[in-house]
Image (cartoon, rainbow, N blue to C red; front, top):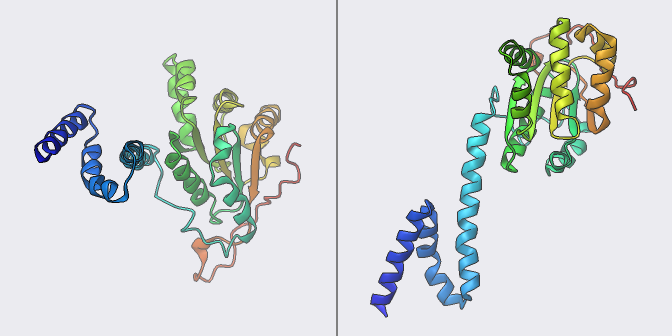
Length: 264
């Protein structure tokens, strides 16, 4: 019996190595006595061993996706100061399940500088990575630079097609710098290519009514906003910048962030 068990262990070790799944070997050895003592069926034992391997792979894969996303810093939902933004808590909690990604819905975070837009966008991106989605994060300016380079090299369609394979793209800081007409058209193509196909998260210090000035064309801005908000959760963050706390500065220059003019 002992010899047979030894041969089985050797066989498991060989098969785990062949499958490039060393954790199967570790889990099988660790759980064998537990399975015998508890009287597990063969199916229960196999399911438990494979579950450990899948969980470990998912955790490892999530970490790789988080590192590849290009986040400026690691921010989580748990780290967020909800006392400063209590009205957003319920909406964000509904998004944490990741269901919006499966339905190719967007998230738009509007508000003055320092109210937590980038933090929440990053945190939702990390949630997406943990749910198995590939994520890319960049500022609006960086996205335009990327698309401009692809356009100049004659490979814009290929680049847009490649980006559609990402479950989530995050566009930070829309509105901080105005775009030239060509850049605005390229950004519109990015939005259009993902419409009803894959999700976007955008952050902006401006209300939608101010986007025409950013993109230099009211018609382009209207068409873009229409596609973005058709399937989207729009959250408006309010209050003073957390970066100014304790520095004797009450507020920054005022920027309206109401969404009253959001297309229906």
